[in-house]
Structure formats: C-alpha cells, structure tokens
Length: 142
Image 1 (tube, rainbow, N blue to C red):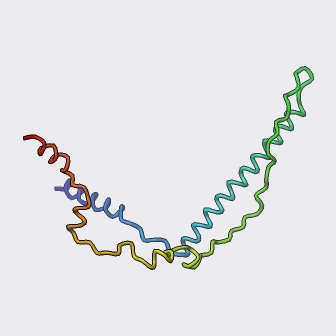
Image 2 (spheres, helix red, strand yellow; image 1 turned 180 degrees about the vertical axis):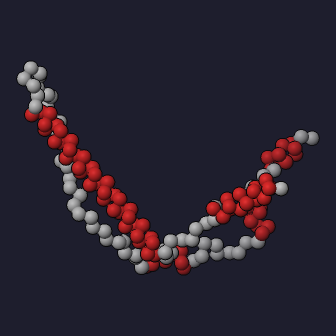
Image 3 (cartoon, one colour; image 1 turned 180 degrees about the horizontal axis):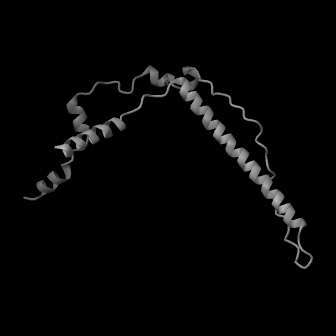
C-alpha cells in the first residue's frame, strides 16, 4: 500500500514540475536582455585580455632567445587587439505596427485569398483520393 502511495505522490510531483511557467513580464524580459548583452560584452573583454596576454608572451619569447639557438621565424601578421570599451546597453525600441510590417499589403487586403465559396464536396474532389491507383489497377483486371 505504501508503495502505491509513494508512486502516486511521485507522479503528482513530476506533473507539477513539468507545468508550464507563465510568460515573463516586460521588466523581467528587459533584465534578461540586458544580462545577455552584458554577457556578450564580457566575452569580448575576455577575448581582448587574452589577445593582449598572447602578444606579451610572444614579445617576451622573441626578446629572450638564447645566443646558441636560431632566431624564431618571421612575425605572423595578426589583427590588432580591439578594446570593446565600456559596457553600454541601449534597449531596443518597439516599432509601431505600421513600421513593423505586420499588416497585409494593399493588394491582399483588397481581395480575400478565396473569392468564391466552396462546398465540402468541391474541396474533396479537388484533392486526389488515396485509393485512386488501386481502383484503377482493379478496374483494368477483367
């Protein structure tokens, strides 16, 4: 009996855990967008610092070649390290519906896609029946 109750309780918890969360509020969505922008900026800062460290290591290596060893090869031209600058976040502005392109073009709005009503029978006859090849093969046999 305890096993059954435990099983039912576990199933109830699984159902509650898989419930759909409500959509984010506008404020929460704005905070999430800002956090994503800050994370992307931090990645650029990290890449900049790594680039600088690699340049320092390469310069130190080239400067400290022992006398008995051959000189290192030519310097390979790599792009310069670019500083991403301070973090600046500008939230995207919502476009009005007219500018967003959410409305239909004038030609589509003037005439609906279907100008003549169709009955259910007309719709069925336009689609090819699934058994048409089989019936044609059986009609060919006398």
